[in-house]
Image (cartoon, rainbow, N blue to C red; front, side):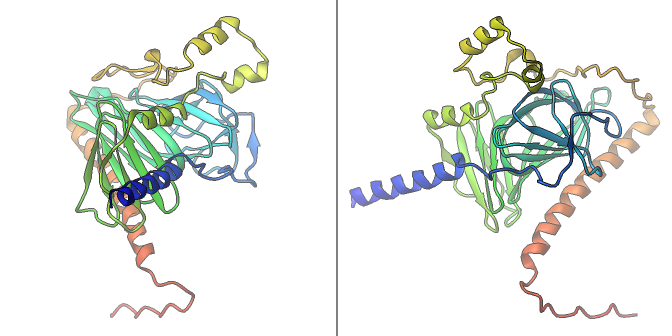
Length: 333
């Protein structure tokens, strides 16, 4: 009896490892997308900046057919979609100091990111389509609004300041919390039953089901997962294009080979409100009588966007399959 339980545990661990560490797809970059080296500015103010890029990584602005090869220093905008190739990786930093690292074969959309330190507001909504990503979300202790949400095909993760990893596929997704983290995971199938995932724990959420049991993860598996997001072994794309060879840089890279933490110089201290300088003109000042109105309108837009996407998920699941769908009755006059 005891041997049978051990056997079941081994099978379960094998299945979980296959879900976590197996590649998502061979490539998520559309084959028919026109990709150019000439970067074009997006619409509005930048919401972040590319910090590191390795291999083939493509940025696509909302409403544009072409994509641009990612390079260190390029600005990112609301509505941008990021694609990483089979050997591509990218690390970018949002204006609030939060750092996101995408592994290979990953697609992520920056739906909306609002950061206004003068109004003590941070409200971000990102969408993980497929792949693996690590999120280091800056804590905003003194902010009155500090929402940061990540949506996958099966759940929405709500955080205020955390370090966690999401692995997303079409019909399942999971979240692994790292150190000093607490993330609320709400599935579309059971929105009334969210779970809290804390330090070195994980939950798996299959499509159409509530979150699975929150389980503790051994440190050797955590280290293995962290290594996926290690960008210290290579240079950014610009360095590769120029063929530059910095011996000092190579030496530093080797010395940091086993350190998969986010680099200290890229972090913003919890509660910090310093916005990066992108050399654009400052915002028009917000007057007290207008501040609350703008705050409510933008927050309402973000919430409505999240609610609408969740509603669409539910509607798609409930629609009957096949082409013979009965006609809906006309609306009574």
